[in-house]
Image 1: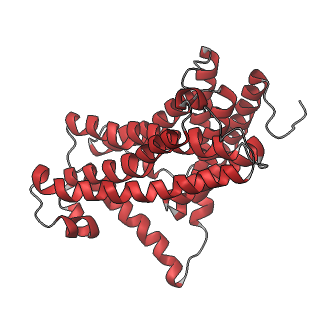
Image 2: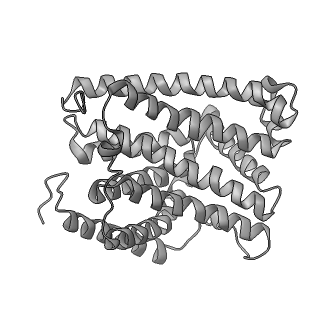
Amino acid sequence: MEDSFRGRRGLNSFIMLAVLFVLMIVCLILSETVVKYTLPLFFGIEDADSFIKTADEQLKHPLALIYLQAMCSSIGFFLLPVLVYHFIFRYDMAASMGMKTIPSPKYWLLAFSIMAMAAIFTQWLVQVNAAIPLHGDWAQLRTMEQQVDKMVEAFFSETSVKRLLLLTVVMALLPAVAEEFCFRGTIQNTLSQTNLGPMGAIFVTGLTFSLVHFEFDNFLAIWCMGMVLGLIYYYSGSIWVSIAVHFLNNFAVVIGKYAYLKGMIHSDVASSDTLPLYLTLPAGAVMIGGLILMRKWSGKNPAGIIN
């Protein structure tokens, strides 16, 4: 039965993705229900419904908010649906995602270098997004981002080492594993079986990755990051490589925020969106060069590119 569905192109792949989407909604509802009934037990929050629905209430209880974020996002919306999805279609999850593939050290080093350059380059994309005016109801998109910023500030309301370790797991490790399993290991793999092919799958998966984050001013940056992660995963053939570089990117934000709030550094790297063009554009060129080199190493040609 292994890969019996994935071996067929076209309609079956889109049906599978529709199933995945339904699973994501169902698992999100289930995880929210679990949170609702465990909040009073773990955190003493009596009105769990109000806490889940009200941003101001969430900001008053940072630890409960961290719990809500982990359960309903990384676990409920991404990781659990993927596990159920693979069980339903009965094929080897480890083999299909490349869990059994461990690339040579040069792939790891190049992947980390590409991601570091992407982190610099995407700051220019953030500036491009920020220059787009929003009027009327569309302005709510930026208001939503401000709520996310307040949530992150609440996470760091305590700057102990214990809190840093907790946030490393919840904000860096869990999202890296869950999102890579979902987007690269499942959605990208499934779309690759359609007429989109590998490159089209990487493009669409990157777009979906960005849309799901609901961050307007970071939309282009997250889309770019999603495509870079997709290419790294495709060329390396290992989900562990994309997880590792995704984690590194997330952890850089967490440790940077922590260091800033502790007074170890003078600027918040998570808000450094004004890097000059003489840094961002060369970084983009190096990023592209690194991806071309990785493509040559892998021997894969996702879009019929002539070497």
